[in-house]
Image (cartoon, rainbow, N blue to C red):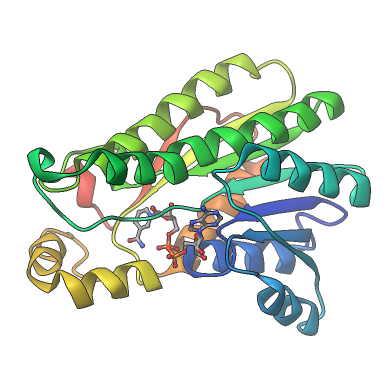
Length: 250
Ligand code: NAI
């Protein structure tokens, strides 16, 4: 069903994993999709267009505020509007005791995962405020809800995303703009393939405590993002929806 016909949806980190799955889901729902990634996402946009849908690609580093402002500027000058955004781009770092993590590594994680989401929210909201409408979903993590040893910087960034989500949701509650977050568990994407290759033991330990005893699929997260952006979720703001096979309810 084309629940997003005539709408414009933007996805960051759209060249891979959950971002690509969400871009495809938005496109299949009838939206024109803007794929944003630091790795040129033109091939992924072309794939969506070849499947009969509407998409464009913009190369952008989410940490660079000027680059982000120009990206939203291009969306608005091209399409005149922005209806939905999935702020999803993020990076993981090697598991390590907090006492051994460098300041540079901490800043690297926070600048992509937290400042990157803030950068996009700022310019998305400027346009959505002009329209008086819009929906935003931020990609947090199970790392936004619980702690895991060795992951303090990543989890700080993901908890921070929920602070941005809740406060902004309240700011825009009466202005036609709904803002929520998803908190995926362990999802089979290239990010997790890297973690499995480099930290097999730590990952096996984490996977043992997934009640559904399997990895999630990117499409299972994309479906929730699409739903949160649809009128079906019209009374939901500021929520952190876990999509984690039960990981965080134990
Ligand atoms: P992925 O590595 O497959 O995709 C992430 C995308 O973000 C890549 O295409 C990458 O090029 C892009 N990206 C990285 N830095 C960027 C930057 N500075 N500017 C623009 N784009 C940038 O990862 P995956 O697994 O799809 O992750 C997506 C989001 O989901 C991330 O925020 C991650 O932290 C989060 N997440 C992942 C989980 C998992 O199990 N895979 C679990 C919970 C959350």
